[in-house]
Image 1 (cartoon, rainbow, N blue to C red):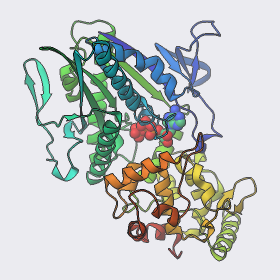
Image 2 (cartoon, rainbow, N blue to C red; image 1 turned 180 degrees about the vertical axis):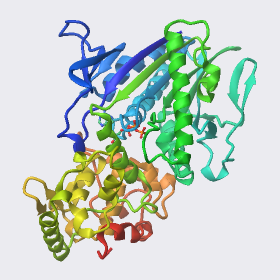
Image 3 (cartoon, helix red, strand yellow; image 1 turned 45 degrees about the horizontal axis):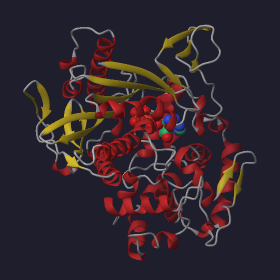
Image 4 (cartoon, rainbow, N blue to C red; image 1 turned 45 degrees about the vertical axis):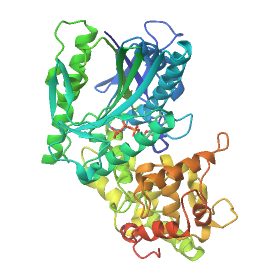
Length: 528
Ligand SMILES: Nc1ncnc2c1ncn2[C@@H]1O[C@H](COP(=O)(O)OP(=O)(O)OP(=O)(O)O)[C@@H](O)[C@H]1O
């Protein structure tokens, strides 16, 4: 039984670039070379002092997905085939990069630990079969479930088929099993990715139904590797867990439901931390029965290897809380959320653009208070102010901020397909010229293209007339359009209509399905 605890500090996001990095990786003692094993954080009460925390390994902001996998996960694949169970956790506060580390993005470089692990498992399976001239056969099956409010839900099951009480768990010959959990065979990486993406759609859809954010459930993927040689069978399991973000219950906006949720998250994380500590101290008693998650995983009961990745943001907690608010709004499904981040920033016809520019100038002159960047606000002391920053309904006061929100993260790389504001000159900049002049596109069309170009299955699938299969086909086609480091993307409706599985009718459905109400909160009277 072994446990490795490593830390990964994520880079500053675009919105945070002007912030101070306060969490740093350092080498132990007086050494200045070698791999970092220390996380250093200044003492908030006395900046001359710093707290140091020791890990098995620490990855700084520059660490790539490949490095994390190669150093921490790839070596465990061999052990999995040699009879050990492997458990991988991403642990950390909301917004620190757990999902990025575990699931990652769709490009090869961005792929997270889970798809890379599966790729390693399939490679090893083929090698094992080849080395034994087919005498040993390997079968891979997977189950995927989430634990929300201490209830277990099968992620292969459509959300509408769920029973609110979740699936029961039982002891079965000394092992804890989830009764009725689906187990799916998956023989290739492609098959795995299809199942995994579909299950993640179920996760976000059910989160919407439960009025919850998917980051408030633990998602547990179990990959069972069955090696059969004659009448002998060896079964081992690799579990990869994207944990819910730990919560601070002192937050003033935590209502009753949210308190119940976070109490349950915090309890399970506390038990998990205790189990990990007990394993690393080689204690005889491991308190794994004290929470459902550790019980189902039998953490510490199996002859296994555990790798816990502690995800950290490089910033202080107040800034992180603000980021989370912005992200939660942005991640809400487009048809349901009056989200400014899913709405386009600027109208596109020249008349509208002109009036926007004028309005922005008026807004700047009108009120200095609103020109202050969002990061100047203290989220703990003044949450209402932050909310009003996010959802300010008076048009003139929204534009400047929308730019900050929109330019962050996934959409930023595609901002050249629509007019945007050059922050150095504060001028409205025309889009990079394209054959089809996106400047003629309506905000609704731009929003549709933006959603498509996110390559986010959960968002694309929610478009009218698009199921999981179609969404997947769209994403695959976009991936096939990648050219080296350049990500392929769709510039206009015509190009969208030519993607595999999409025709003129689907495009029209998708477009009309995007509610005009999505824009009204932000742009009031804009044409869509
Ligand atoms: N190492 C990284 N490199 C680049 N971007 C990152 C990295 N880690 C995280 N991010 C970005 O930071 C943002 C937050 O990350 P992520 O969603 O993975 O956090 P999380 O801890 O899973 O949050 P939650 O608990 O809310 O699910 C995302 O936009 C993600 O793309």
